[in-house]
Image (cartoon, rainbow, N blue to C red; front, side, top):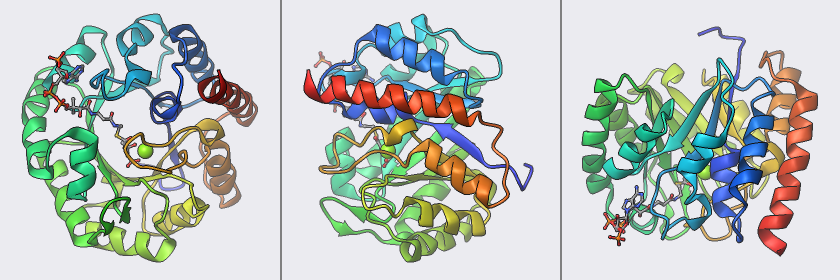
Length: 289
Ligand code: HMG
Ligand code: MG
């Protein structure tokens, strides 16, 4: 890994659109993702193979993957909570999958209908199949700083789960501040605990910007050696199982911040701004029509 390079993982088609009230048409999603493909991102989280009863907004994941024009050098990724999701993702040749759990039992139950231990057990067949298919698997942990139902989250619990995900074969664990309530001090505690087990090159920061803490949290992560951040153009998004949570930190803000700190991203700022404009239009369709 080059130390002065920051990887920005674009989340908007998944983390962004999963939270819209109204269904964004498959065609609009495809046009949006094709435009995102021109920004220079190496990875775009394109959709989720989850239950359509739980997240109807992304029930067209297969059609979206079949419809997009894949750009060489870009990995189009998806969330897969269980074996069924993984098998469906394989049918449309997803480039990378992500498994997700939480550091809070109540959130895990609300989000995936099982406790944390069971969520990890569900991942085992996914990991086995991913190895056979040579598919990279990313792990997410939600509620690393705060839970909308339990409030306090123990940083050592986050580190314990992160370590389990890495030992299971995830190439990276993304630490999710789902509610956006984590401040720089809490974020640092979480990272310090994780660094007891994991090299920072295997960690990523996933900050929701509900309380405008995300950029400060990203700075703390960078000082601790983390070089990968999840974001969404236009700050699109939220989590349907985290009441009140707003979108991911805006990609354009993260790009601007890290460039001003002297890091490289190889992203096209003008194209990102165009995508941010489209994201805002989609948000209007998603919330008003
Ligand atoms: P369940 O209801 O316990 O599952 O859901 P089940 O195995 O009992 O199956 C029930 C029904 O769902 C069956 O259908 C299954 O076929 C179907 P029925 O027989 O009733 O017609 N089903 C599926 N359908 C399509 N794809 C699948 C699938 N699995 C089962 N993969 C499950 C368990 C995990 C599936 C459900 O809880 C779920 O889909 N949860 C997803 C929730 C979600 O997507 N949340 C948002 C993403 S996570 C996030 O945003 C946080 C993150 O951004 C980080 C952060 O910010 O913190 C990553
Ligand atoms: Mg999220």
